Length: 131
Length: 161
Image (cartoon, rainbow over all chains, first blue to last red; front, side, top):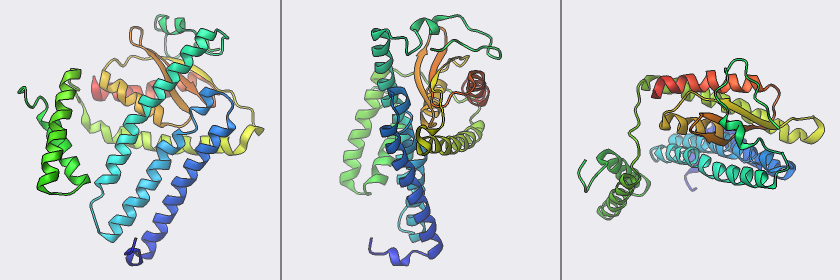
């Protein structure tokens, strides 16, 4: 924190821009969780934070510490990689639990399992039935 | 493939990562080495299939396409959230028959679909290869099927199969 005066103006501006962008996207994602009404809509909101929300904050960090010349930028790449690789695991667990529950309730809000057992349809003309 | 070090490259990479994230010292080397050896033996217990990269030179192209698409859908989903319920949306499920069978390729596709705001990977049937995704703003189903199939799956099949 103490050497930030040494940061050139252009780097400070870029850092601030990406930091605000990333934090803003993450905030919008959080607002989305509040605003959406169903589980499968809500699932989409946090992905703002895990994609460009994270990406922009990491970019800001990269620019800042590269301009200061204090260390290599591997940390940011690793953080981005781990977030990208681990997000699907959580999301699939939640989504499959939700779809299982909805099917058990049997209110017809989600497509039945049998939809996935149909033989392959031609891709170009297919408009598979959804509920 | 010795019994002590089933994945020498993975072990070396893990140790490198440990040292980069902490500091280069003898103590961290020992600690990181122990973690790396333990993790690679845990990996061997999972018996993963060996991923094949048939055309790795296409990876930057895939990364570029995905980065651009994620940026676009970030803007789209952010505007949907900010506009609230003033505009009528139609969220829904889309079933996509996939031809991709390679496990690594499917894992990468899962990362892409999940990282893209507006699409969520819900279910995949390995026997028929049908993938079920949820789309936040579903306008045209055929368009989504064609997007996944042509924009990502084709490229992934070229890289991994």
